[in-house]
Length: 362
Image 1 (cartoon, helix red, strand yellow):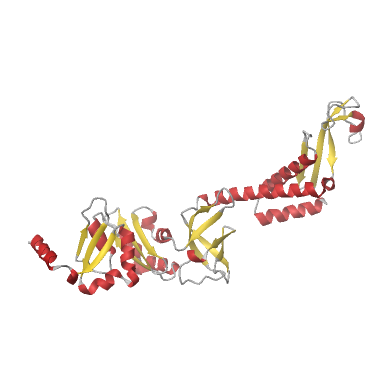
Image 2 (tube, helix red, strand yellow):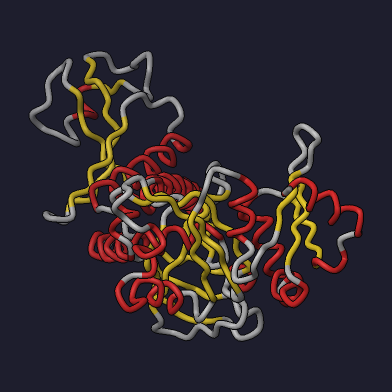
């Protein structure tokens, strides 16, 4: 029986990726709880499990007494009876009374199993939370194990743990297949107090920032700072950067020699276009830069305090470019700057406004 027990123990250790010493303590605790159900008034219970020697035993400990009718038979034993277990025992000693695992019966065994299962789940939860605590809000590598054909949810492995990348967190248009190694952003840990799961994403805008940190040493060391990001996953991203060193070109650093750095990011994002622009403190200038590649004639900020709105005038032939396909360029610029942007063409500006502008210039 001991041989089968230790085979099962070894399998449990491999399946749950739990250190054997920790697992043995969990199992001992579970068995002790089960014994306690059969012997509720016994104060001393001991369970010994040693895989190296193959020792697996459970005993009740009772104090040896010199009176035949003991006051507490659950914890005391008459010396003559005690000597049937240990011939050398003396009054006042603690004698070990072996318990046969088969004696527990189905209910006791089930209780032990449930207790062990519960303890292992608690351990797995704590281990998972500890393991991913320092990976939260970071970019990590993951290997695709399989893609479910009906849902298209992907099962990935990260540090030997299986993690789901659901379809709506995958980049639109990308096709994952078993064996692919991809970068994912660890959004956080869901249900940490119950059944924790790691939430990961390839559509999160912070993934773009983390990828640039990996590719651009100037961002990693703090010389270049990512000030803002706006993203339509699978289509386009805009990233605003600022250099703390006047001798370092922030945009150039992100693009890299022969566009090598930005190309690596774009490849990881499955061809998603990425616009890198210089961040500036003046809102009107920043809004104009954010609408690139369109040219901007004028930016008028709302005069109402606390209202982040503006009207942007662009050349007649630049209106479609400024707005972008399905409003994408305007949407990204708004997300990048935090301003609601109303884009108009020059020929749509009323004549009296144009006259006022001319007067202001004169």
